[in-house]
Image (tube, rainbow, N blue to C red; front, side, top):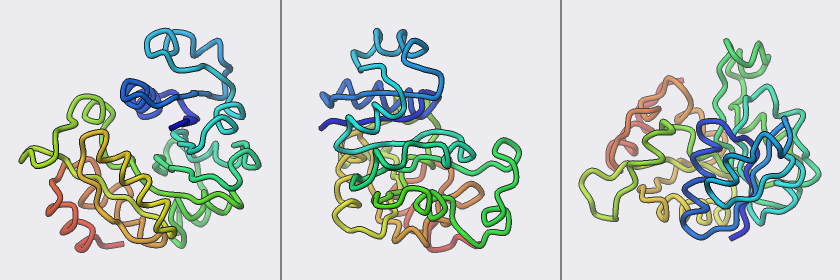
Length: 208
C-alpha cells in the first residue's frame, strides 16, 4: 500500500520505520521540509517529502502532528482518502482549543471538521512509540497488546484494523468518532498496554 505520513516525531517516525519494513511504500513529510527527513529516509528507504506531497502520494494518509497544526494541514490533498489520526490533544503543548478544552468535541471529530471529504480513523494514539516499534507480537501471543480503532466508516475502520494486525497488535473496534474520547489521554486504555479483553473493558468503563 502507498502510505503518506505527515509528522516525523516519535509516532510518525516509528510508523515510517515499521510500515516501510513491512513492504509498504511510505512517503513521509513534515512542516520543516524534506531535507530534514534525509536521515530517516536513508535509514528506512522511505521517501522524504513535503507534507503536501506525502498527503498526495498515499492511498492512505496518517497524521502524527501536534493537534494545533491540524488547521494548517493540506486538507484538499486528503479529500477522498482514509486519514488515520494518531494525534492527542495536550493543552500544555497545543494551547487552548475551545471545543476540546470544554470537552464538547473529540480531537478526532475536530480534526475531521478541518479535513472535509476525508474519512478520519482514530488509531495509534494510545501506545508509546517505543512499544509500537518493538512490542508487536504474533496473533495469539498472550503478551500481545491491543489497540482501539474508531471511525464512522466501517470500510475505513477495517482497513486500519488490518494495518494494526499487520504490525503485530490486536485491533479493537472503538466505535465511531464520537466515541473516540474513550481512547484519549486520561482514559483507561491510554498508554496502558492492555490486551484485547482489557481494552474492551477499558473502553466500556471510561468516564468523560
